[in-house]
Image 1 (tube, rainbow, N blue to C red):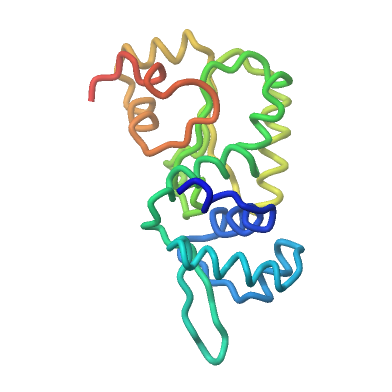
Image 2 (cartoon, one colour):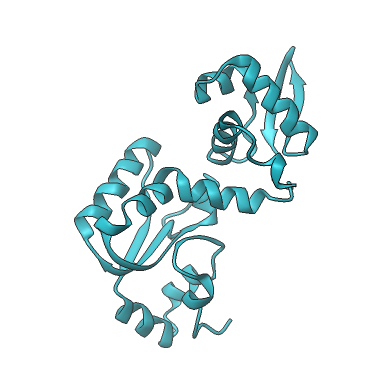
Length: 196
């Protein structure tokens, strides 16, 4: 089954487009071609293969065939995680990990990774460790400019994180219990000491 996932750079670009777009976004072939900067025949070929494997569905509207990624695809969560770790905010955090200090844990909320709307109460990103704050703020600022939206993030050192977990702080428990995409660190270790 893995051979159906990553067979070409065109497939990778199409996956990145679908998985970083709003939920249930529909794309016409020409729009996909424009957004991934690839030849139309290569895009059509990949879309046909992806539809054959059940990754995308298509529908006709006003003489135009539109495609969308299937959220019930077997490897959807895994692909979303891969894309979140290589693109946008997640990719930039991982790429600049050494400049950011000593990060123990970093994760994105799944809602943020799926480009779903979030509220002011949601935390899109949590970073735990000894952090070089200007570097983190620069990366977040760049991503906010690209998205044209504010990113809600929180950061703390390891001692504060452990203290808040032990104290069963409402904020930290809510953030830890939300669905997440781990960027740095192990989720089991992150949730140690948290009793659900």
